[in-house]
Length: 131
Image 1 (tube, rainbow, N blue to C red):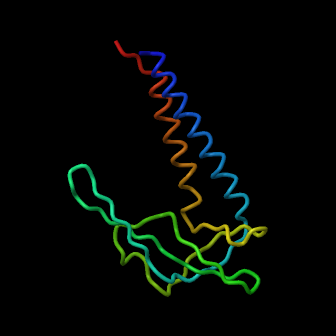
Image 2 (image 1 turned 90 degrees about the vertical axis):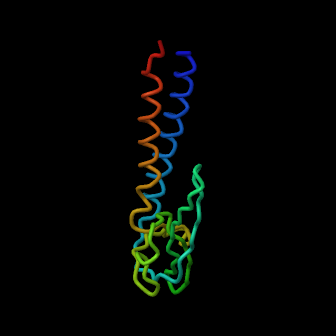
């Protein structure tokens, strides 16, 4: 049983490290900054194990780099649609070499944060003793 915990823990740690590296790389690549405009909201519905529906709202936006218009969607969902003001401004971080690669404020922290959480879960698995 302990070897299973070690393998599961190592898997969580490995995926966590990968997410941290990918998130940090994207943050470095997306060094350009501009102000975009919120153009819409995408609604996402999720049903939990007890049958309750949960709704999340993601901002859709456009931004301009060198006269070219690009479109994107935030990775950070909100539980209330009124948090997103269509026509409002949104900070956009984009890749100067590939301007269609972007993220919004707060999105750049999601992958590293999830990576850290997975590493913590992995360490718990590795260090837990059954029996």
